[in-house]
Structure formats: structure tokens, C-alpha cells
Length: 241
Image (cartoon, rainbow, N blue to C red):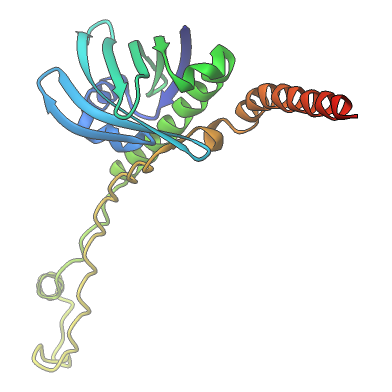
């Protein structure tokens, strides 16, 4: 199936390019993702997906097949397989970056092929899940970048430097309190370190992410199954009579 989404990164395009290609930095922004290794253009990792009581873990690899900084285009090919099943997932993801008013608009085109249990949801639900997942990723990425760009507090001027400046300006007098008896200035608080990006959730909960669309899709076959079971029970009771 073909999917297309877009999101905004709150930094100029050059900075956005560097950040988005720093896999180790952006991986925690994706729910359910675990990065195992990065070797040049090859990335190995896992993706844990949860649908109600069912958990599925995909293990696979991804590779950058195109990096064109001048055009703002990057293409990633990824494939994975269930660790405890026969389901597979493969995707070709092409992203285009466009600068706009000091920010970056990212358009993502995905060619996705999924087999196994998640494929039963169909294109409509998969499109809803993908859109909301991109939104979560973009929000986490924006929070990380905003925290990283926060200005550091200005360091306090040491007390000896203040006294030297006062003396140079003729502000000191004979009645000044001797330095030995003057109260010591309170130490300046250490600047708070920039917060690290929030760790990714242990698994991608599709019911939590997609909400009502998934429930609607599950409700239809579940309702049909219940109706069929009801018809069978009624038929069996009539035969017994």
C-alpha cells in the first residue's frame, strides 16, 4: 500500500537534515522502536507492536539508499520479520525536506507491504495508524529539539570580580566592610543539563494509537462471528425440539 504524510520540524532545513539522519538520536522518538546497531548506512533494530493482549516483535534491518542533501531527499529501505511468527513487513520510505520560515516541512512517502496478523486491519486502519504514529514521532522530535535549543542561563559574576570592578570605578570607601568579614556570596546554581529525549515506549500499542478506527474494524468481523454463533445455537435448539 502507498501512504503519504507530512510533519514540521521546528528548525532550519540544514539542522533538520543532520538530526533526521542521526538515527541514534531520533530512535527514542519512535514508540516501540529499539535500536540494536548502526554500521555505516545499515541499521539493525526491533519494533514491538501490541494489539490488545497480542504482542508482536519485528526484527529487521534498514539501509539508506539515497542521501541527497542539496535536493533534501533521503530514501530508506527497511524489512523485518516476526520473531515468533511468519509475518513480515517491508517498506521503502522517501522523505523530502523543504525549508519554510525557519522551519522544515517533511513530506514522507511510504510503500508498505505487511503480511500476518496486522495485515488483517486493511489499508484504511493502517493509514490511520501511520498518520498518528508520524504525529507522535514529530511531537517527540520537536520536544527534543526545543529542549536542546533552550538558551543556557548566564553564569553569575564571581564576588572578587565584582569588588575589583567597584574599586576601579572609585565606588569603595574607607567604611567599606573588609573582604575578610564581608558575607560570602551565594554560589551560582549550576546550569541544568539539557533533558535527554524521552525513551520510546516499550511497545507500540495499536489500540491506544489508532483508537476507534481499529475498534470499528475489529467490531465488524467480531459482530459477524457472534451472529453466526447465535444462528448455530438457535438452529441446534430447534433441532433438539
